[in-house]
Image (cartoon, rainbow, N blue to C red; front, side, top):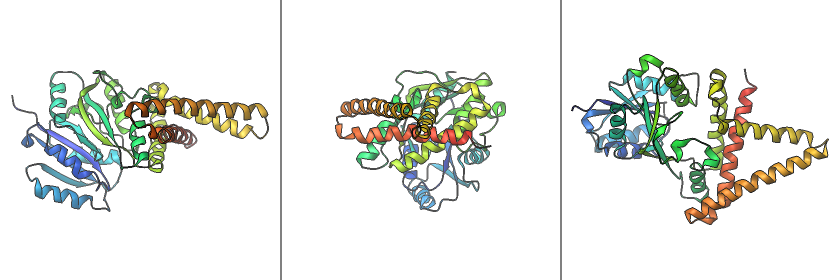
Length: 329
């Protein structure tokens, strides 16, 4: 059987630190190298990203790489420009922060040909973004259900139907049914795309045998920016599809809203001060216990306070971004 031609599309901007690891992982795929291409949509990088890509090309000319410019410098615009340049029958969406395991493309194609799903993907293994306790704690937090709720692609061990997958693979013909990525959403574009796939009668399928490593943010500041952005654009997406709201998404803004209300009322009402204290103590205690248990399982008890800070940052930044978006037109 002839292997379907695959286009791997990659949005990219200032990814000098990780782009060669991605390309190394793609060059190591078990899928025939002459049966897939890599389309990188670069958002006018100002670091050494383009030089790193050119350096990789010289040492691995057998991997077909095309770099196109993305003047909009946003992820959905990058994906759409890459799709316009792609020639594959199957599209695999990848990220410059990721490194797919060698069988990634082959397993995605096999799942599509077996009819497992309309858009198929797998699980992340989160890698620290730096060699520090904080970075390791952020990576651990990003895989913990208390931090990410029921986002199964972060920890699932069984295959099944899900709401979304991070790096999906689908047949090109799907775009004719559901359209391109929504360029008005600067984050959450994958989830919104998958909402349209499901509304068109398609299935999003997650198989834990399809694996990729993902580099987490290295610091609390970078993590807070990332999750504020996630929360902001999730609320924008929910304005269009309110029925897609999940409990994991409602919890952080509700908690941040409660804390804000109690803070405002505290100078004037003693019950508000008491409830604020109880809420903070209860929340931090629950997160602290979960962090300690996770750190203990990893054999790194020193991660506990850092992981507590990471999970709290994810919740509070996501919730604050969501609420801020609600107040915007």
